[in-house]
Length: 313
Image 1 (cartoon, rainbow, N blue to C red):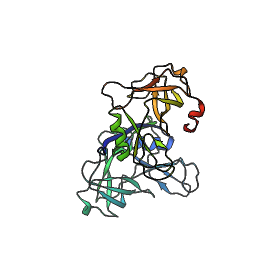
Image 2 (cartoon, rainbow, N blue to C red):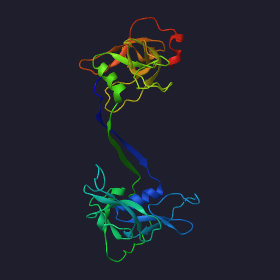
Image 3 (cartoon, helix red, strand yellow):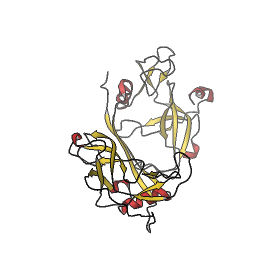
Image 4 (tube, rainbow, N blue to C red):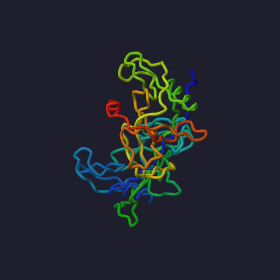
């Protein structure tokens, strides 16, 4: 049995969002060291502000400045900060009800240890040295034992408003494909494709899953399939993917390898994209030192009859 594989993986993408008038004013205010909330019809002040009353669903636009000082309503200690978090040393996540607000704002509190944090403690905003119109313009909160700050009465009107933000989403994790797919990947490195047969229904699954999704029983019997197969269905890709050196348009297809009862994904090459069709017989094309087929190309065989692959669509 091959060693069960594992590898670090990162999923990362930028999320671009346009801002409405309320969020635009809020983030522009942070850039100018002003914290804005929004006043509801029943005279509550919500910070951070929202565009619609969470109770009545009415639109609200009445912006009001609150103080940069406030009170911790609850907290949790973060003993091991992760990449991209507000502070690179241990800190507390806190909900802070700023003076003049009726709701709490989530952010980091810079404190020497959990013993220095308590519900009800007074804190104030520590502003970032460089501010761009984002929640990170508040670098963090810090303990404060002075008098409540007085807001300046800002109306939320700015000449150069922030109209959009880009949030960089990222997930770091370690992935393990498990026993069945580790064997599948090991076979690919030898330019072979293996699946596993269900002992009950006798279907061969490629890639193997370690269990039959239909019968719910473990699978262990390895079966080599292919290398040739049949295109069961496909799509034409017209948008170029970042970091993927493939010219558009190209075809990505479901391919049922001979002997398999489940179609896998693969790119079709060696044929104009508008000539790819269901039933096309294909074979893998390997590049030097590749761990998996680069693409599949036509074999020159007659197309497969529809009845031969209709159950694999």
